[in-house]
Length: 401
View 1: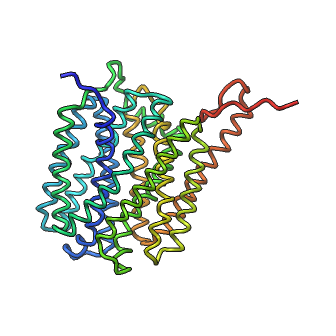
View 2: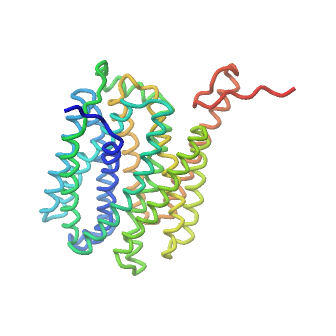
View 3: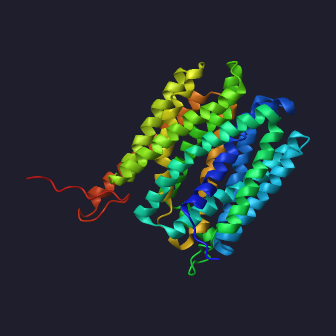
């Protein structure tokens, strides 16, 4: 059978890590009650998840180059299915935590494996366009995850959530086994992991990309980490938290649609990034002001709009200089930003203040974006006007006489 990587399959696999994480969020308060642990301890399961996810990205990304994209993705999905089954029958918090770590390790293949396969097929402007189209579809994933998680938790408790996760993994595994092709180029170089690591560690643009991805994800996932307990403190029924996923999905969708619109009009990376950072900072400030009221959900739309604009462009651009070792480079980049994300969520779980977390993260992202602007300006002054600047912006216009 002739297989081809379709946008539908790629989008489903990219949505998978987001859905399986957000579907779990409504169960956090039930887990805290069921296992007799504090809200902080229950929230830190999310941090542990991303630490394990980070190392999963490294392993699966490396395997993408060594054994191929298809067998790697299928193995990761199978591992996630096994971990979800273990979680269903967990009788203690430690075993549940171990199952979540194993699940995170497996789920990481949905991120690095899929992105590697997409980068195998697309390049340059077309790659940015594909990521922007997928961003619109991925806007649905938080709503699907949170709303499904709220319903499963309401009727069957946290065990129902883990049963739903196992069913989802089984369906995606079957579909991928049927339709997923091998996209690894015949001439791929099985580069040294440590050689690629050393090369990327000296690349300032890679560090900037990793921090930006991590900061925008902290803005997104800190809501799913902290909002269930904020709703409980306000005396709002847990299922209402599920409905907020629709609001946030609308925000991500609007952001992704704006991104697609602006890319079609040839907007470049830097102005898109600056727009996203300003939106996130304004949204974070409004969340801080409305933190003790249900209305804090509404300015979160600005934050997730920023996510929908920023993330597709950062990911599409990040590894443009690593075509010779895409799987390994993607693994290392993923390790970097998921470790940063996990550390950020640890601090968010301790703070338990969504507004402060959002403002701090978006302010740091804006500072990084400003360093990129300054770097482009310096490069434009130093380079011959007939050449493009570092970040792909057009050459400066000749002065008028």
